[in-house]
Length: 312
Image (cartoon, rainbow, N blue to C red; front, side):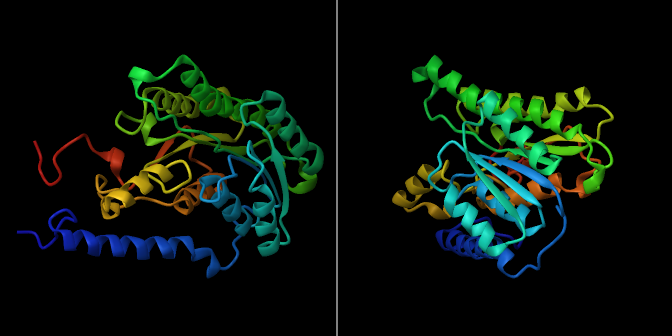
């Protein structure tokens, strides 16, 4: 018999596993406080959308990019409420990083084209575009509306299309005076495990994320030999503002320790873990990674549905 006990075997085992998860997550969330500044994005000009949530992937990624030496961060969100705090947080910790915040809709063509043009006008180049803006519907198919479907597609898919369309146009422009001798750049799209297979979202949400994953695969073939890479990240269950209701529901039921139990890691994730993957894809370390859908989900999408611990 294996010495390993699953977290669902006994209540006390689940509690021990949850305490270990909390400790692990606290270390992940605080690692930048102890980690020396890096240079993985040194002198890169970056755009990140969907940065408004205080517990979001966009905010965590913006801070991570600053930590790694980005020259100028253009940060966009539809809700301006938390933009001043994000700007001041980065400028206080990383005074060498330029920060420009923009209140705009990531699915607005004029706004995205204008932001890419602005990066070229002010910095002479665009190196990274992280299209992270999105939303998740909650209505099951039986009560979902065409309006909800169209909103989902506009926010989740159109925003990524605009990012690919206009960021690639900007990235085609070299800037030898700043050390960018050739075209190139990294476009990163936030998709979801819901775009890989069913079971992680509503019909419209899942369809929108599948479209984003398809875009990440097809766009590179439209950008052949330009050194412009396009990839998507497919988060699993991450504790963000978008998933807050799930965590609050579990807390109300006293089942917090069970959150994330369906994946082999046995836990949920946090925005900083997605930001680390976004950093890799944005950096030159991922120079041969193109047209891929990166699942960052604790292993959730690695399996077909089975009873835990049993095989057909």
